[in-house]
Picture 1: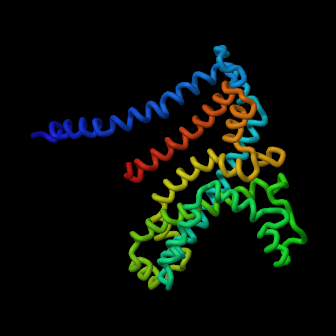
Picture 2: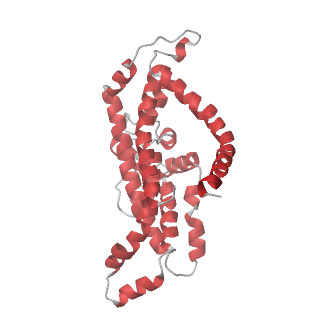
Picture 3: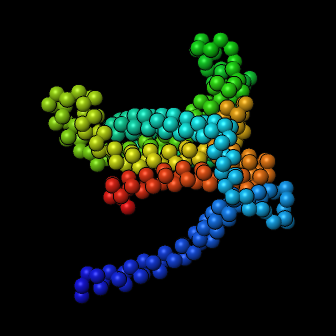
Length: 298
């Protein structure tokens, strides 16, 4: 029996097993997506339930693309993504290198690493709000006792610091994911390679650049794309910690979608904003698929 003949029944079986999942996805994701696309070309409003929305073409998209406030929120999302993912990669790789060394209590340290990542985002956001509290926060107390701060500050109440403080809270929660992926990649590197490089006189930086980085760059690049997708869509931690304030300093693109649809009740324009976010996410997902194929994981 030829290979093609044997592969055909296996392919039909695979599609048969996937069919229930595909039907659920079409019902749960496909219909809402198509409905959102339709609404984005109308003047639908949640204030006018029961009336038929009027078709207005691409006006909502033109308004969104010409809205300077939306441009500002896109910049906030891009800044949040760039800074948070960069810090998560640096801290995550550093922690992975540390936990890859032999020391007493390493197993316990590895188990504790996952703790921040396991905490729900809402709980994490509330915890950091208390840490940043302008009167009772632990951060103010710590910095003033160390002499690094002259007086208590409202970290989330000042436009210049609010977004960075939200980023710090997000980094603390998500760096363990990068660390775990890098640590798993490091398990495949033989210690004999490092010993041979050390005997040849390679410096620690040379060993990291020539041995460690090539070993982890593949899995790390996939982790970076996944975290980039999640970070660009950030909403929940911003909603809990600042609700987009002060003075819209932490207002992200996803928060604009929520505000347009559920605060201003403009379902049509909110759908247009949401579809623009979907387009950006689709580009990032395409990049993730390309990296996965390149790494042979898909």
